[in-house]
Image (cartoon, rainbow, N blue to C red; front, top):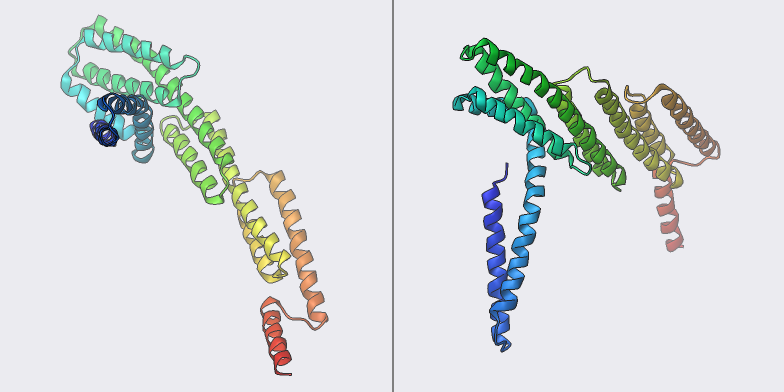
Length: 311
């Protein structure tokens, strides 16, 4: 995780450097009050850095959780809460705070990372209350109240974790579709898969998540197939028929994976095999006409040019 303090220190240094640079330029230009525009520019930089800080740290936090897993980080937070030894009143206050954060996260326009924050709070609360109930430090009435709170928090945890996984993976998938390069499409879509997998580790039987995972894997397979088909068409256009056939076979490899639906696989296979048959027919026609493949043609052309120059 990047340091929030380090981020602000860098912002202050940049603002200070901008202030000194502008102040020196204005003093050199004979300005009577050089500190005023220089201070205004530095203040604008600090304001922009403060407003961007929340977005930057949320994205870094999400990336950290995707790389290291949600459960591992939740266990670490729960151990910290257990060391503090929360009382029954503290648990009640934590429950109210989580419910308040949950309501705010469900407001229209909330970013997916807010749901992830609430899910983290829910996980910490559940771990802390489980430890408190196992210790036997609460009476029967307080224990019943804690268990009732746990049921509400479990519902909130599932809701917010699944909402985060759904919204964040959709945003990444949409971003992948807008990318121009094949590798960028695959890399961004793979991040969406990691997001869904992190939620499936806790809720493996969630139907919507599994369907989304299948759709993203099919998208990645379609990107790979389209990439190799495009390369094959380029080779065919250059009359490099053998290379085109090899690239069509690479496309068939990704098309016949488990990620692709059967009807799509059948239609795509039929089309690609038709292209391969057509290229093989062209190769046979070339042999029958006494012509060579692309490499031989280039050598023959070179020899013809050489003999023409000699004559």
